[in-house]
Each structure stands twice: as C-alpha cells, then as structure tokens.
Amino acid sequence: MRKFNYSKIKDQKWDSEILGLIAAIYKEAGKQELYLKQRPEKLERLVEIAKVQSTEASNAIEGIVTTNTRIRQLVEEKTTPKNRDEQEIAGYRDVLNLIHENFDVIPITQNYILQLHKILYGHRNNPMAGRTKTVQNYISATYPDGHTRILFTPLSPYETPEALDRICEEYNRVTGNMEVEPLIAIPVFIHDFLCIHPFNDGNGRMSRLLTTLLLYKSGFYVGKYISLEAKIAKNKDLYYDALGQAQIGWHEGKEDAIFFIKFMLGTILAAYKDFEDRFALVETKLSALETVKRAAGNKIGRFTKQDIRELCPSLSVSSIEGALRKLVAVGELKREGAGKNTCYYRVN
Image (spheres, rainbow, N blue to C red):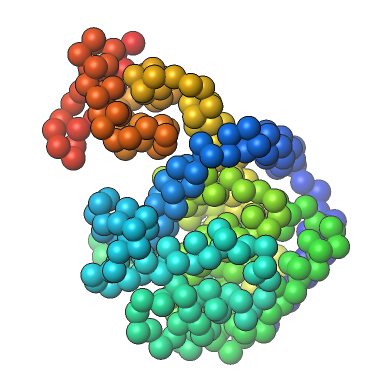
C-alpha cells in the first residue's frame, strides 16, 4: 500500500512561481482582514451570493443541475428539494453552511469526513452515505466516439480507511507543528484525498468542501465571499489536467503534486482579487446608476445582469435593471438577445 509521509514536502525546494503565489495570497488575506473590519455589514450579501454560486458550480461540475431560480430557492430559502438532483444540491448546501458556521470546531479526521459525507446525502436514502467505498472505483475519460479510457485507478476499498486516517494524521502533524506551509499542505491533502477516492460517490464535491474547510481553519476566508467552486468550474479542463499530471506515479510515492498545487494557489489568489474588486464597489457610497456603471467598467466582452448582481450585492435586482436600461439608453452599453439570453457589452 502507498505510504504517506508529508515530511518530504518540508524538504522540497519550491520554484519562484509557487513562492510568489503564496506571498501574494498572504498579502491579499491581510488586505481582506482590513476590509472586513471597515464594512462587515455590507459584505453579508457577498456571503449569500458565494453560497449560491458554490453550491451551483460544485454540483454542475458533476452534472447535477437545476434552474437558477431553484438554486437560489434551495440555498437561500432552504426550499424542499423536488427530485434527485435537487436532493444532492440541498445536501451540498447543508455541508457548506455547517462549514461556514462551525469550521473552527470540525477536526480533520476520518470520522468527521465520514459525517460530512453523510450530511451531503442527507436528503437521499443512500445506504453508502457516511461510509467508505465498497467497490473499486476508477477515474476515466469518455471520448467523442463513445469509448472510455481509465486514467487513474484509486486505492482499493480495503486500503481506503487506513489511507484516509493516514492523510489526516500527516496533515494535522505537519500543520500543527508548523513544519509545512498550510498553502502547500492543503492542496497536497486534497490531491491525496482525490487519489484515494474514498467514496462510491461524491468524491469531487467532498474534495471541494474540504478545501473550503481547510482554508478556513488556516485563516484564509476568501471562499466565504467569493466562490472557489465557481472558479474551478470555469477552468474545469485545467483543473482535471493539473490533477491528471499530479497523479502520475502516485501509487509509488513518486508523484509531483506541483501541477495541482499551482492550480489551486492560482484559483485562491484569483478569488482574493475578485474580492478586492467587489469590495471597492461595496465600500464607496454611490448611486445605483454609478455603481452599475463602475461594475460594467470591470467587465470585458459580454456580460449578464447576473454578472452585475454578483459585483453589486448591495443593490436590488430592480435597481440593477433600471441602471442597465439607462446605460443602454444613453449609449454606454449595448444590449443583445432577449429573456434569459439577454447580455450586454460596453461600447467603448
């Protein structure tokens, strides 16, 4: 069985790109702390938007979808789910809320991970909820002509419980003793988790929930205000490519996780940059028209009303719609399409 020893990470030499990403994230995290002290009440709407986006995006990566309206109802209003997809979405919402509110008292152990998995399937009668896998699973790709190819074979069911214990123990040891930078240890833990693939179903979603949990526990709260899952979903191909490259040689302990580490650090930094942009719009007391005008000025190419809503969490939908109409009327924006397909772009 593959051995887990995170001490080798401690002795590894990291290239300038990784060191630069880590330094930039710490700088942005420090700025965020100042922002939160200045305008905590104004940022609550960002939290709600991020929850909706995270729940929607993480499930969509796995092909679990519903309408935008139903996503908001399920996450914000906790509406009763109507079908299997909505049950899965509601379960993700429940785990995400639990992490938001209790991250500081959720230890990183196999037992707690199993409990979170059980809650993920809390709206479905799934006998495997909260239990490690009973059958061998495979990570495979399906091609346009219909054929599939196995890209990676995770650990067998009988090896899984011990392996899950080991990565938790090693992670807790190296971070507790401050032997390894948390921003390195977190992607390594998530990579190992995905290589073990401990559950029959829900591994990808659990990995993204655990990413948020680990970041919170290490003092990086950007995922509370900006959806990391949405950023991963937008770069899904790069995410899977980085994961695939990092998995090579994993069973023999010869993998190079640097590809996955760089992807995750880049995603975290991009989220912090987004937070700064959105805070700038929240912080300044402007009219609805001026706020929407500034938000549109941050967009390149086509954008939707929902894109502006994300940037202007303090404005109502009707205020945003009115501002967009005025900006179109005065010729600053062009409008295309109708109904759900409506989009806008800047004239100059």
